[in-house]
Length: 427
Ligand SMILES: *Cc1c(COP(=O)(O)O)cnc(C)c1O
Image (cartoon, rainbow, N blue to C red; front, side, top):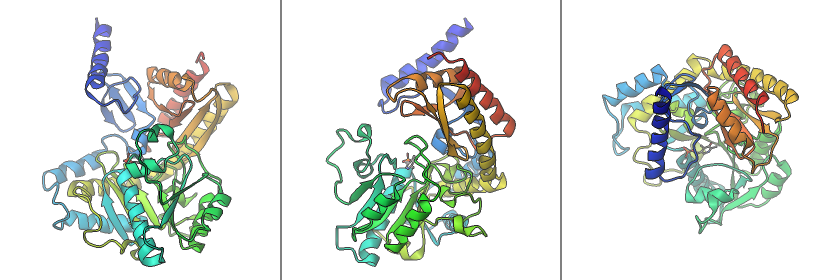
């Protein structure tokens, strides 16, 4: 009786969603109801480890009390003024976030894709007004297999047919697509004097956690500087502690970009943030840049009704404080090393796992099957049954990205769930 009722609650919810929602996602069949820290509970009361963190938005863990406290406190005072008027908390946030990431100025938005659009607009305006590129001919270099969001312009320069098909006409002008992690291709593309910016993910998350060679970002940033081209880092997924450094462009450093190990820090001209900027509590995104770039934006040239709203600002300040207070960056770095060591051992033992790759707590395992196979999907279903939620990116890659508040004991518990699942899996 109990079992029957359990099945029906999950099934009913999925059926309702399928009937009334656009089918723009293919979720793992689990219906969630509550989250706390690294844990999620479904409508039947079953408890899981979250090993996706809403695509790295929930770095600070689900429903973090400090962030929820800031949200509810601000919600009772003021939620939205629009930027037609000033708000005290926006001023505080602007000062806080620029100091935190060591940039002169911030431009607040809501979603990651909006922040990417904002970065491209600022880059183009800078090209015409500061670099002297001829009107309407600025180009931005992007990479194969990029993921920067879903707007019409962004899908125009995507190389993923699923993201593009039947969404044309595309914005064909103004983008040059080159292979990722290919410094020679970048050098070649930079010969075009109309190039204004290079937009890049420090690690390609959606492409399957593809980590570039050690010196790629540093060399790319240097080439851009030589050519007076803006180096634009999309850290929407990789930023804010996820990869074991505050930003993935920080390399192996946990500082904020100006410490004794500065030589390993690649300073983007424009930094794009989203996702964990709010700890997964509320849509908050931003771009950060220094005066000479950000000052091309003047009243009326860009905006957003909700961008920089009081609720978002209060939440973001709390979310960034949690990263520091709880030393989540360091934790991600240490647990990441342990996790990859354990997964490499598993890869040695199992024919099913080819290898593990990643940085900090943004990792993926490659499953020994074709992209078209459903093996990774079925492994994720079994992981779910065993109490851990993860999802394939592409047919044969499983991303593992738990909240950064995980303890070593919890991580080892997860490792044993993954090992048990893989070692007992029948293809
Ligand atoms: C998720 C993501 C985006 C888009 O963010 P949305 O909030 O979904 O619009 C952009 N860039 C990267 C690297 C991302 O991972």
